[in-house]
Image 1 (tube, helix red, strand yellow):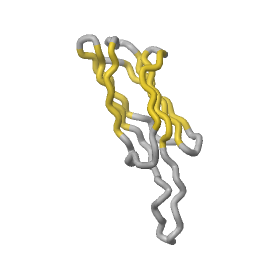
Image 2 (cartoon, helix red, strand yellow; image 1 turned 180 degrees about the horizontal axis):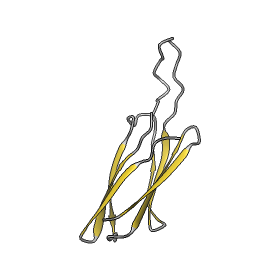
Image 3 (cartoon, rainbow, N blue to C red; image 1 turned 90 degrees about the vertical axis):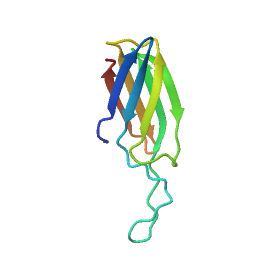
Image 4 (cartoon, one colour; image 1 turned 60 degrees about the vertical axis):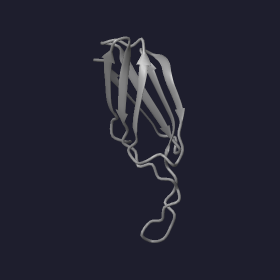
Length: 103
């Protein structure tokens, strides 16, 4: 299982800015190892985010996204104390969900 995501959510006015640093190798399937064999593809395919259990973001990613990707987005209507949850699912079927409180 991958390391936890680092999530920071900061309220400003009627919205919150959410910054997420995901820990994932993101192999495209086009790179070769030292023996000359292709490294199998393994990358994040789906990313979702929710505010207090209600979906606010849905994204589909592919193999072109960099290793340990960074994602930033704004959520209207978020205030201090609300919970932001971010989930990703990769091409191997592994998933990870982490949560943060809006400050």
